[in-house]
Structures are given as structure tokens and as C-alpha cells.
Length: 94
Length: 225
Image 1 (cartoon, helix red, strand yellow):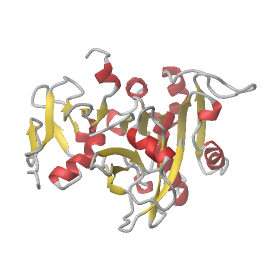
Image 2 (image 1 turned 180 degrees about the horizontal axis):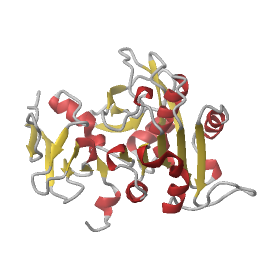
Image 3 (image 1 turned 135 degrees about the vertical axis):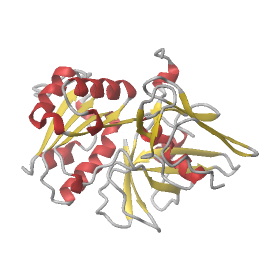
Image 4 (image 1 turned 90 degrees about the vertical axis):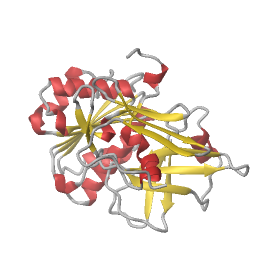
């Protein structure tokens, strides 16, 4: 990935822990998951987080694949999950 | 840099390394939210300390630094985080690497360690721009002087006072080797700071033979969701 402003502002999954609690009703930062593209495994907190946009994007730190997208709109929360978890990803609680 | 104490009506013990989200709502309904690491030890009941860096044009930090007064009420959510956390029962040895305000969650771990009277060997390598930029300077010196197995290593990257005996450059492989070597491969490692520092330190420590699964990182920076 190019060293650009997105890189400078990049955080990690830990930074969106509160947002995930708000949407899914639980702390998911320690959730263990696998990247479906490269097979890299790790806790959600270790994913790269891009939060300076209308939505939030979590990417694989190994291959840069987009693993989770969340957008809050006036009609509710939209999200798209690609990371693979043993017991599935929780459903939004609101 | 300012530290704030928040009294929590529904306090629950946190784990050292966790954070809280603070949300401010303006009179017109505009909302801004930021995450701040907890600086205090979980043993303190009913309240937490947050240490907040003033960020240029930062909506929340500017309010906290310039407008907030004792007695103000805030909307908070937390404690948050199940990954970048350390409890004394996990043992060590504990290797902490921090840059700038990235030292805040590491301070919670050190305060927790001291309050638990844990004597697991611990080392902090802490990078600051100058002597005056060192957060918790006196308290860290005090902790290091207790002789309970905690050792403190400073590096000052921009300017150093006369007679400075610490490191005087950015954290690099050689410095990390000096600080981590006594702990060997089994050190439980926490790295918190800006992305460049976190990436470089994690890569260097992995190359030095530390087990990747025992290296935990948190990138620190202006956040907003």
C-alpha cells in the first residue's frame, strides 16, 4: 500500500470496538477470524482500520483484502462481512 | 496533555489497556466521538483517569482541554477492548514500547502492576520528542525507583537536555535489542504509538526472535467514527 494520508490516519480494529458494541451488542475486538483471500488469522483488533470516511473499513494486514465494511445511514446500519469466523459473525442487535 | 478523572455512576473494573469512547453532543445535535485509553489502574474503584493529548483542530480534545470544567457530565461507553490488555495474573516478562501519547495504556498496565504488587519483570521503552514532552515523567521515575523489577528506558528524538544519559534517536532495531534481550523470546510485548513506530518495532522484535503471538500492538492516532 502506498504511504499516503490513508496510511497516516490508519488505526486498527481496536479503535472501532465501541462502534461494534453499538451495532452488535458485544465487544468483538478479541474475535478470532480468518481472511478468506490469504488465510491470515488473528483477532479483529489486529485488522487495519480506516475510519476517516463516511463508513468504516477493516482490511487484512497481510493482503489488504476488505474484510468488514460498516456504514451508518439515515435508514439504519449497513454492513458487509467477509472475514471467516468459527461460529459465524453476530447479527446486528439494532 | 491533560489528565481527567471521570466518576462513573455504573463503574465496572476495566482491564489495563482498554479504552472508553467519549461522545459530545452540541446544542444543535451535532455529535463528535473519540476513543481515549484509560490511564488509571483497574484497582481504583468508581472512577477512571483519561489522559488526553490536544490535537490540532481536534473537536473533542479541544473541548476537553479548553472548555471542560470539573463537574461537567459526559456520555461515555466502555470499557472497550479484549486484545490489547494485560492483567498481572498473565505474568510476564512484560515488555512495553510506547511513543508519545501511546504510553497511556502502558501506564495503566504499570499502575496495575504496582497496585497488584506484582513483581513480574517489566521494561518500558518510551520515545518522546523532548524531555518536557515525557508524560508521567516523575511517576515513571518513582515506579522505576521502587526496585520491584520495573526498568525504564527513555529515548528523546528531537532534543535532549544537557547531560542526557538516555537514548537520543528514534526507536530502532539496536535499541529494541538492548532493551528486550534479557527477556528472551517469551516476553509479553505491548507496543502503542503512531503507525510507523508500531510497524517498525513489531517487525524488529519479530526479527529479534520474539514470538509474534506474544506481540500486541495498538495504533494510536486521531480517530473518529
